[in-house]
Amino acid sequence: MHRFEPAPNLLLVGGPKTGTTSLMHWLRSHKQIYHPWPNESQFLIAGVAEFPTSPIHPKGIGILAPYADLSNYNKENYVMDKSAFHLYSTRALSSIKDQMPEAKVIITLRDPIDIMLSMHQEHRKRLIDYTLTQDEMIDFCREAGFVIDENNPQTYSFMRFPQLKQPVLEWVEKLGDRVRIIPINTIKAAPLQTLNEILEWLGIEKFSDDINLSKQNESGILNSARWARFVRTPPTLLVSLVKILIPTQKLRKAILDPIRSPAFKPKPYRRPELSEEVRKELETVFSEELEFQKNLSKYIDSNLIIDES
Image (cartoon, rainbow, N blue to C red; front, side, top):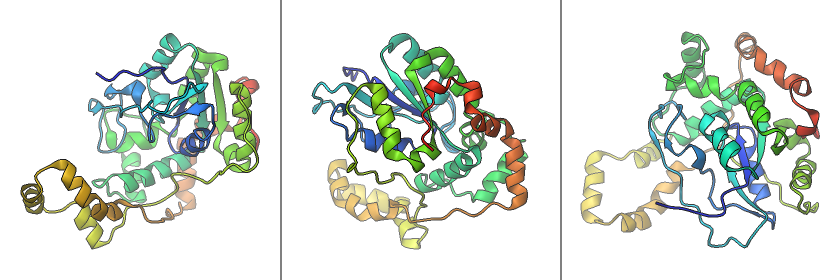
């Protein structure tokens, strides 16, 4: 059993594809913020998955939180976690409300159609076995009635994750002033001002103007070249032979990872444009979400919203 202390008290909980990765990289460069994981941990939803996290990962599978490295922790004011699926988890919200009374939460928002299409591209970039085109993904959602169905992992990512209204209002209701809501447009338009407003809320020193604000986790897709596909999914016979010739996993990683890694490096990719007809169809599907984000201060105390756009 792996235990660690202190528990995170600055939580970037999502949603996915809403700028959380860039925020994570920028914030963890602050001298009073420590981040013990390489990327996302999903530590509050570790165990049996409450819902599908991708088209090939249904609810009920096991989620393991990665090792939290606190070897360089130096009593920073904040230990940060970024886990974009926490927003949709009743387990995560309950844990934060009841067991983490000092934790502060950042929720980021984005146009639901953009989230839907970006989630598709993210799955194509990360999942070897997911090959549906954008049009095929939309067809699957259309055939399923554009509904959120946790028993249908093929469509869940694209219907649940873009719809932020219900979970956001629930988190704000339960946590109140411990939450800040940030539309992605304000991160894009005024990243430094947005960061410094976050830091002011946290009660720590603001960033200077020379901070590196390069974007993270940008668009891409797995290399479709024949050699890359071969390296990513080699024949079973070849895998068995390599295990015989190189018997230890540690040695195999040392020798083969430099050879295999280029095949997993995403290539730049621009997603297909939606036809006017399909865009209007999706605007109807996500009409409630679009209205919510357009009139955010009607639903949420404006003091909880960071908007520099």
